[in-house]
Length: 221
Image 1 (cartoon, one colour):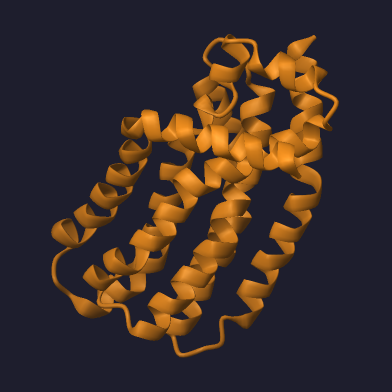
Image 2 (cartoon, helix red, strand yellow; image 1 turned 90 degrees about the vertical axis):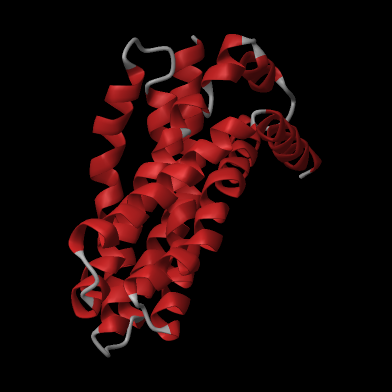
């Protein structure tokens, strides 16, 4: 556990030194979400209807911006090889890197989303469910994205390939996450969508670090 915390602390320190990368994802999220009300017009009913999809798609794309650098710097400077040779299980160390990715990318999106949701005239209950859905969904995006980042590590044109690999896997998260907020907007219970999102997250927590580790070992050989 100490090794995992050390990896998280190291990655957070590196992120603090490279603030531009973290801020780029946040500004992207803010700008994309804010453009839609300006382009569509101030029609409250229409804005409430499209808000869940827009917020979730923007969060999904913002999360992807940093995926190409999840393992690439460590691969370039040899840190990844040192992790593989460490007596600590590589899967745990990789889990630490995924957690730090969520802390620097996903968590800020969760905190910003309710503020941006006000532009779409969402009710407080819908904003609350939006936060809950993003708390379940953004870690899932980081876990799935880590698999794609590991599979495309060291590949020329890896950014495009990463998008092609990861985006189809993000579709269930997008459907259930946006669907939960839509249920509240329509006056229905979001419990089913949130339960499915939680089940997907539980599966990803178990399988994604293992799959990512296997892909990284192949890339290091």
